[in-house]
Amino acid sequence: MKKSAIILFFLIPFMHSIYGQKLPTGNPADFKVKTCLHSVSYMGVWRGQATLTVDEFLLKARELGFDGVMLAAKRPHVSVLDYDAEARRKLRERIDELGLELVCLAGYCDFTAGVDKAGIPNTEIQAVYIGELARLARDLGTDMVRIFTGYERPGIPYDRQYAMVAEGIREAGMIAAQYGITLAIQNHHDIALHHESMKWLIDEINLPNVKAAFDCWSPVLEGLNSEELREAVHKMKPYLIHTTTADYMELPRFSYDPDHTNYSPLESQMRAVPMGEGFLDYKTFINALREIGYQGYIAYEMCEVLRGGGSVENLDESARKFLEYVKQFK
Image (tube, rainbow, N blue to C red):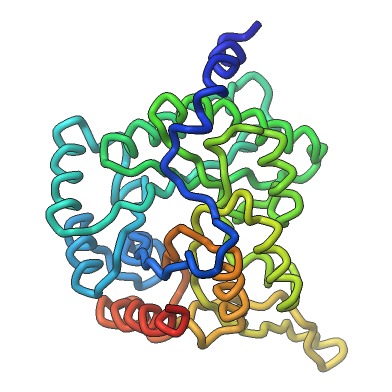
């Protein structure tokens, strides 16, 4: 028997009672709007976006009035390579000093990386990376790490890639369990993107510390209408512990065809806009969160080119509009 299987055998009876993440209660009266700002919003990841240091970001989140923060677990923010024991202690104390809640660390993983190359233990590499994020999360005072599944590579059987994701997250989950950390899978990467597929994946992994960070964005892009979006939230109720929001508009694109003196349509370009000003149906989504008695935070991120540009002033204004938008659900 593999060592990991032996660890799992002994851990599972205890794991159900040691994780702090609260699942939806089923009672709408238990729902409460708790706001969280993702540090990717001020990390310089898109054209023209301002970059704040971690401390500047924490001060910004407090100044704007957010309840908690979500820290990007990579450079230039909180990389495991840059935070030794002393740096972790200082950051934890700083977050406490500012009266903020560290809701989770945002991991950046891809469990199908290298699927087309033989001989490299990529699943193990990804699991160890998530394990190090779990250790970092524990040291910083949170009990959740947001993770992704994997991008689907062309020319490789889907089930082979799916199996890598399931195996890798299971291994990562067992490592995270040693630190009391829950892994929240965001519906972002290709594998198990749809809510039915994610539900299946989480059930197959079958670890009490592997749950869902289910967002509105991808279901709407998948073509779900309002009622289908509501049903998706209800189906994810047994798993849903976190959600991240951002609103977008579509900019149509065309290619000129001189042979026909006409234009051919191309895939639209997505651009970020303040909450409530795009095409995402957040009224249905957040009301569905209320219906299931959602207990987690509602995070906000600005990780795409934003209308008005990437200045600190414009980012701040968009963040304030998010806070104003969610007041209607309190």
